[in-house]
Image (cartoon, rainbow over all chains, first blue to last red):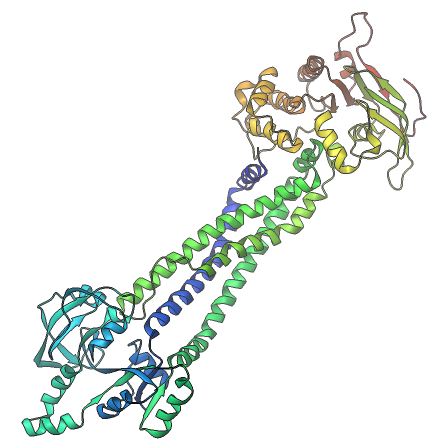
Length: 398
Length: 226
């Protein structure tokens, strides 16, 4: 019989105590797993959605609002900016590319984004069905949006004003679905994308009564914002300052705003982390008490093992192995529990068409969980193991 | 096989116990008797290398036990000494077979299930291997504990009050099993007891003499050769 097998049998000779200890330790580890996974998924989502966007140029207001709206599509835009100004950005020597974004309408909760074909290629998205739009009032639909809306190529739909539910319908202007996009794991999956001209057509027809009106409006056309990529990283030093001081627009750097957002979320994260820490500490104490009592109850058994030739170190190792079993079982349960909780949150967020959190994932950071479990259980076992180490064979003879 | 000379042991704060000298051959039976507190258990501990003598020497199977380091004493005890405690200390966490496997684990000699089955069979409890100790009768538990003591074929078997709390019939069976098993294995048997029923239960020699060497202990006894 090996030490590990013997310790397993000793552990389960007290099934209630062992189960409660595993459960308690698992709860703390599940909380930590959940925090690590959410952080991993958020960072991954941020990284994917932000890839290739160095700065977002939009109307003056909250820079974070601009990023949340323009990149993640989870907030309302602060206002519009002139199309002419966006076109001028393309000529700036530090700018490599500019993708205009026009927002304002939605269809059953999914945002309609007016833009150019570059927006699709920016995400590296391919077509699952159909083709990209080749004229105004054609749209391609992201994979998640298509699935949830039950939309197929050739279907038509009418957008409603505003980004939430309850806006009035643009009943006289229908979009036709030209294509369905492949899944990309980015915000694009939850969008309906069309030509910028479609957004103008839908809204200008409300105010323009004749061709002359349309010509006037064409001169004053606006977009919501522009996603800008630099030619050189050095542009990050001067371009935002140029936009913020020399134009009526503002430039928001996604990296800066996201780190600000994460630091604001950090307070909540710290509270959860502290809570998980308290759970782990409680579990550690519980393991300690259980093992301490086990040594007290088994003193004569341990003395007999000493009589049969087991060294004090071997007896101590037996106790440590019991603690290790607790740590291993709690690690498995804690990590599975954390994954299940994350999957549940991901499912709930997807129902809400909110920020995307994926399902099962095994980031490198997650391996801190079993390490932590083994450390806590082994630390809790040190004193009981020392007690076992000191058991004297003489106790058997008295 | 067991030789003690001028052996004394001192507990802190009390006068040292002096033990009579002893010199017995392999396969002998030693009967330690005397009132409670006279040092029977201490003598067993000295022979098993659990405690170091204050003075004198203990030699078991050619090994000077008092000179062994604690680690060496553990290893030596595992290979030389079998022990039957007064309370049997069969672990309730384990089955009968696992209790014997635990003895193999403790000694660092994992000899496998065949030797466990053989030991249980030799003591007539071969069919009890899968039971928990709480499912055994008193006699069955005694046999299992003896199987554990002789599992590794020790050269010396130490039995501490093996008949305590047993009725006459069970005591007779216990001593008979102990003596028979020790004889079959050619082991030297030392029984520490204050139970007057034990001595008559040990068979006489072919010459009609007592089949054991008596070692009568009394507190602070003077050295004496037996």
